[in-house]
Length: 75
Image 1 (cartoon, one colour):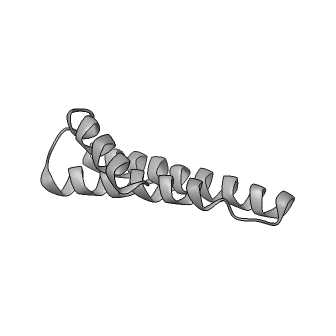
Image 2 (cartoon, helix red, strand yellow; image 1 turned 120 degrees about the vertical axis):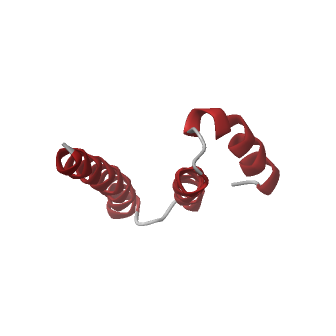
């Protein structure tokens, strides 16, 4: 059962990374520019998920705090 959960989690995280890369590649290929605001937002979201995972906190409970921190730093 644990192996199935690990496989599903790996596929979901890989799909998330793939969607972010696909979106950035599409924008870059069509417009020949990189929208850094979108890249920073994606990196901020990944930092939030990583930090709550390492701290063992519920991601939805930590979301308002993360939003305030991202607003304060402008990311």
